[in-house]
Length: 330
Image (cartoon, rainbow, N blue to C red; front, side, top):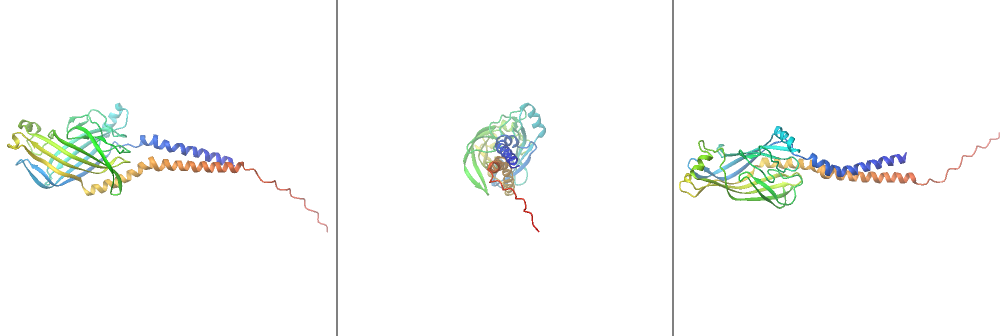
């Protein structure tokens, strides 16, 4: 009976020892992915910003500019692309909507971002676009890959429609979460006017006729939780200018927007809590369970060997046979 128990324990030890690397290196890369139907929003604010008044074509100080960013997964589009791409794909429809202190629209920038659900690498397919213009992305956008590394990544900039390195600048602690800090500087670059302008009657085509051009620069910063690859906080030092042409009345340039754009406090708290929760789930598959299964396998192996040794131990001297009872005389 003891030998049978040791064999069962040995089989369980082998099972859990084999399950540990299988969970980490086979199951996790296939199970960890961005859901195709994900929806999320984010509100950022630039306080004491500078904004162009298109009525007077003069820049003025305003109390606040609000940026609302939304990401919405298109499940039907992702399933359609998956059939030809041969891998799990996510299609995000993104909108960056900027409004002034009066609530009126300043600009909006729609995007369709198509990427691999596991690695976050771009997937080039019909529909990949920024503000209606077809693009071919290189590098990441919005999210870093699971298991973010301490290195530079190519990051796609929607305004310039180009990719450039975003640099790893060190490990920091952000509200109790260990994060990797990344920073990217986009130099002054001539960019397109948005298709939808804040003033009725003004279009990118009519602005082009005046000879006025739009220029943009930003310093982009992200604090990224490395296990999930999710940014817990982000901000930009963002500047836009209009330059030259007859629209400016002889001036060389005028500030269209300038401000430090930062996540609103309530969204920071929500994001940190969400990332902490997702981090625990990822660590369960990459660390806690694989290590636990290894320790359990080792313990079961030790117990199996102990029972096997007990079963093979030589027994003591055989007990003497009981003597027949002597007759009792009366």
